[in-house]
Length: 342
Image 1 (cartoon, helix red, strand yellow):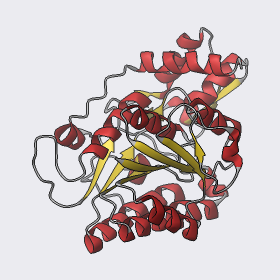
Image 2 (cartoon, rainbow, N blue to C red):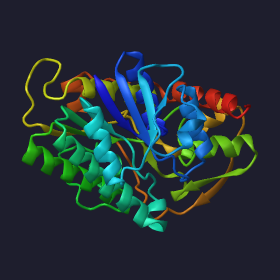
Image 3 (cartoon, rainbow, N blue to C red):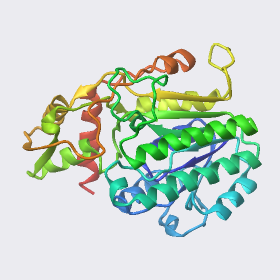
């Protein structure tokens, strides 16, 4: 298959591209390589995939030196003409939209970035799918859409009309937009609500990355809501296996049953929430050093607990996350120490 992955200089996009390349798909990856966090980490991910520093140049296709079936192009989702040209030229079978302006707290400081990338950019992706007969659109939503829902575990049957951040609102908007395009134009679309993904090559604005860095540098870590928070931490390998299964089956489950419609949304998480203080203790053990701790009140836009009901994804795609938090954090810390020795 020929697959477009947006956000391939990002954490999940990098790993997904690697997996699909390995199985023989032709992958075109795009990313704007913005400076929301250190672009050097993004260039390092691209380098790991065989993409040279020529990737700095806008709209210039760069072939991987390691994988002949992978090409990267620096491009903005909100650049309507360039996105339209890319779709028309490449005629993708599947599109996996992982690019987005991420981060809950940054959306309070810089709302325009979220509207441009997550709303305008996603509209351009939908239009590309509409006009070029894409067989399946898979796109990243987020557990943030649940806001402060109290009922646990969080289910796709729950109401999600009370977001507590603009980031969450843009992700819910993506689901509504995809539903509209599926209804009007018959585009098979699958939204995946990701739950706190972690692992090697991860995002440096995420708590586990910040904690590891601070502990190793003998600096204090900030613990919000005085440690009384729970997250459904999900290891990157489990996430990627699930996404690949969804990409493979746009209109039917593995058992052959036809879905109710060509529009679907699933939770993708570990379904095992971990208390923040236990998570920190796991990092301390992996690093071999105790953290200096600063306790703070809850941050604006944050949520108390995430806990994914993944039964629908299990039923339709055989999704089965298996990575224990101790093993996943161990792999991340090992990568972190190696990466920062460079």
